[in-house]
Image (cartoon, each protein chain N blue to C red):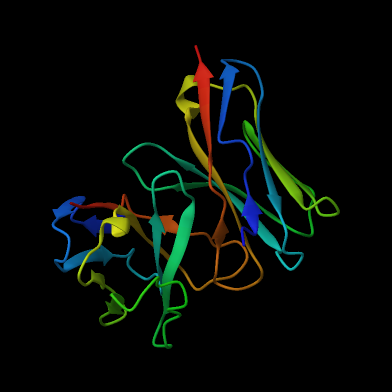
Length: 111
Length: 115
C-alpha cells in the first residue's frame, strides 16, 4: 500500500526554466510533508517542508505547494540549475515519528 | 559538526553469511532510524529507536533482521543468513525528538551486495 506516490520516475528540464516535481498521498491524517534531495552515493538531504496548516512554503529557489483537498503536493525549483540534478523524494508523517517516503523522481537539468 | 556516520560504505558478502552494519548518529539526537532502498524503490522503513523506549521493529522484513542501539547512541543492524534480495542501500538517519519542524538527517548509507 503506497501511501506516498511519485508517479514520474524522471524529469528533464532546461537550465533556467522551472522544475515541477509532484507527489500524491492517500492518508488524510498526514500533517507534515518534506522534500529531500539525493545525490548518487550520498544520503538524502532535507530540502524544504510544509505543515498541513499552510498551502505554500518558500525557501529561495524552492517552493512547496500543498493542496489538501487533492492530497497533492509539488516542489517548484526556479530557476533550475545543473547542480539541482538529483533524485527528489517526498515524505509525509501523520504526527508521529514514522516518515513515509515516495519512490523518488530523478531530475536532470540540462545546461 | 559531524553528521550521521555509517560503516562500512560498501559490503559484499556471500549468500548465507551474516553482516553487521553500523550507524553513529548525530550527537544529542534521541531518535534513530534505519531505512532500506532497493534498486528502483523508495525508502523502506525498517526500525525506529527513541531514547530508552522499546523500538518500533514493524518494518523489519524477516526475523533474519535485527538491530540494537547501545547507550542511546551507536546502532548496529544485523542481517543473518543473507539472501540476494537483501542487496540494497541501508540508510541510517537520526533526528531530535520527533515533531513538526524536525527532519531526518541521513548518513551516506551502506551498499550491501549479496552474491
